[in-house]
Image (tube, rainbow, N blue to C red; front, side):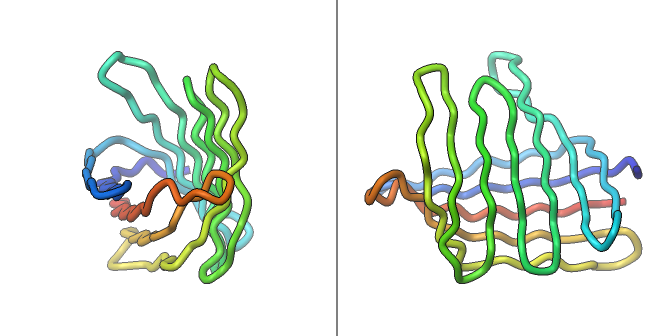
Length: 137
């Protein structure tokens, strides 16, 4: 496991509104059996920690966020996949239409993840998400 830094940017468009969040943080990054694993903690303004785990292969990304809200998503480019969100108020099944997925090595031990997807709860589209992560080894 190698200690790394990530720069994360997430743009979210819901209804007519858009907002963006970005931050840099420490992460652990490793390659095993042809897959890449990225682990990092996300802290909110209240100091609560969400543990994030990304499992990245050539064709898919499995994302799990485990904190006050648990999110499990599997992304495969140009496919509709299932996921869920678990909150203190209940469990919500989601569908994900991934329209952009690329994971590439840059220079040295640096990598770049570019993900774009539409999130659906039931038949309602709840938003468009654009996630970019730069991993610096």
